[in-house]
Image (cartoon, rainbow, N blue to C red; front, side, top):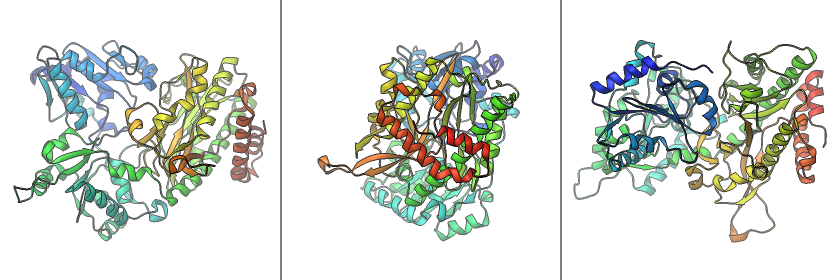
Length: 615
């Protein structure tokens, strides 16, 4: 992770700001579809600041620059930002949010501007209000992006990758059925239609997949669904003949990608209707939709922000998707088990010298052998020693560490398969771990087990469950600065809302439901020394209980990740008999699903048998 000199870039940006009479310019991380992971052409915040993490906001004034990010990236940002930048560590006591910092800087009648396609409407409204309250001139929607101008010809081109159809044998439901369910929601809301702006929602609704954004099988598009029509805004040349036929069969019409904003006035006029005495029916948009989209649709009078009904429906997997998740994790588990056996043999038996990228390359090679493999679901976090303490560390080819067999090795990785998306983290030690490393690992493991075993009434949120995974760390005065779990897509984005386990506000608002798929990933990170994370993917399912207080169904988790835990890092004196039984049962499940795969591979088979021995 190298520091980028941003002096010239900031000087060029400030020149443009002065020309346009802008005092403060906000540069969000997201693209115009509120994507967490973005195409290279949309990495404006990274370009201007040098910080490459997936979350953060840059704010540039005429004489200051600040970068706000969360606890996952404190370590990384401190290494990548140069002397021009102030790091705002979001979530720490007495550290302002980027919105508060911006509002404070706007005092004295200063003008704040942002590209309105990159900021959600709710955030823009709150920011504008805060700016005015602090004596600022207001928030200006500046069309045309100033960072793009500074970037110039070096800015990567917009991707235009092919889009393919995902057959119903993988999706479990056709587009006509999904549209019918969405239209029921329109009826409930008495709405004119729904404008779909989030990319994975478009992909899910129309059973299409693409690759415009690395690791995320999505494509640049919008959609508008009314009671009697469905329009997909996309560059139609990207669609295969099979896609064209499928969309026509499901009565989906096509328009150019850029046409939505051109059609916005007509869409808004349709919502108004011809009877002035009747209130207009509004178009619904996601709370993630851009400020620019809401303005184009007519603002508050004609556009209403709601939590997306598509996002809610997508998060509850059907039986086909759930079976796909179980199956792809067995295949993915086999790849990881073969990788860990190989890596230990290379480092310990053969005394090979391997760096973090070489290890990641080998893991990808093994995944490619698996049935229905499409690609990785994110860039592999292959990290040794102190690098493992950087929560979202990404090794750079030719500029990364050699794996130290006497240090902790953390591998967080995943893949996209036609039948599901995987995300698994395992932490290993090939030598002699310190007592502190073993204690931390075992406390993290105990939290993982406690959450896995949780049983809770329907209506419980991920916010309420978060402390189950942290409780053992807390007793030792330890913690971690990231969420405990995120939703996972079905051959879609590895991070999928609206569900999750953690302290984010949205996790207070959205209860877990049977059919949800999410991660269980507590951790602990000792800056400059080591990092530990254990991550499984779990399915929320209904469970039978002796009683049924309140006549509510009760829910629990089924883990689908099939990779053993590191025996070398477990301090068994810290485990209860129940936890040991859980580990033994888990190991037997892994053996039952995977042992036969390696009957002709003595190296991997012996590693698997050793790591799954009873405790």
